[in-house]
Image 1 (cartoon, helix red, strand yellow):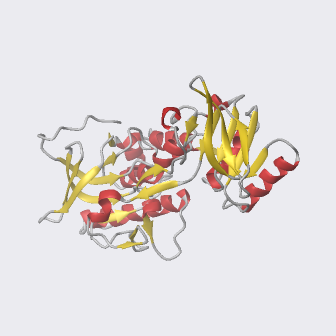
Image 2 (cartoon, rainbow, N blue to C red):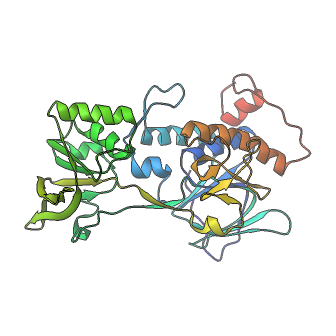
Image 3 (cartoon, rainbow, N blue to C red):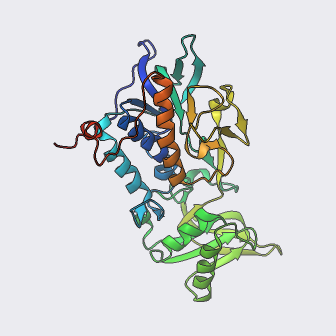
Length: 351
C-alpha cells in the first residue's frame, strides 16, 4: 500500500484525488472514493498512518464506532487499512504538503517538503487539528528524560505494568489514561493545577471514587523540579497553592497538558477559515475553493461535532461531491454494497 515517492526531479504524480492526512477520516475517504471508482494518493507528515489515533493514544478504547462495541484506536486504524486494500491507495508518509496552487486548467499542483509533486483533480484536507506538538513539562532538566521516563503520549500501555506513575493534567486524556493505567500501575498519582477538572464529569467521578477507595492519590499542584539519582528519574517535586512542596516517588511521568495545534502551510492556501478551521458547506463538504474539500476535525460548519463518526459521514458525502466535480456530465446513482455488481467488482467480492 505504501509506495516510494518520487524525488524532486521526477514528474508530478497525476491523481484523481490527493488526500492530505492519513488519520481515520482520511483513510475512510479512500474507501468512499473507491466505491465510486476514484483512486487516491494519501499524503501525511507522520511516518505511519493513523493520525492522532496512532500517534497519541493507540491503546485507548473507542466505544462509538458503529457495530464495534469497543475498538482500540490502533485497531481502528488497522481495520481501515484492511478495508481500503481493494482500492490500492498510494500512501506517501513522512511528507508535509508545503506548496499548493490551483492550476489554469482547474486542477491542483501540490508539492511536499521532500520534493514530491502531485497534479490532482481534487484535494481533500483531512488533517485533523493540523500538525501538533505536545505542551511540555515546564521544569529544568527534563530533556534527557523526554521520550523515556517522561512521555507526552502512551504508545504501549503494557510497558507501564508495575510502574510508579505520576500523571499531570486535568483534561480527558489525563483522566482516561489515569483510569486505564490504574489497574496496571504499582502506584499512581494524578497532579492537576486546579481543583476543577476539564474532563468528562463521569470520568472525574470515577477517578474520585478510586481516590476515596485509597487506590490512588490526587494533588492540586504544579510541577517544580525532578528528583533524580545516578541519572535515573526517581520522582518529582510538586508545589501546592499554599507554597508547600511535596516529593512524589515515580519512575515514569506522563504529561497530558494538551497540544499546540497548528494549521501550518494550510493557513496560507487562501481557504476561508473560522477559528483556525476550514469553513465547509454541509452538502458537499467543500471549502471556499471549488475542488478542495475538508473532512474531520479540520473543518467547521454550524452544528459541527468533532467525532470520528461525524468525519466518516462527511467523507461519504464529500465522495459524491468529488465525483460530480471530476465528472460533471456523469449521472450519479446511489448503489448499495450489498447488491451492486459494480460495487462488488470494486471491492473484489467473489461472484
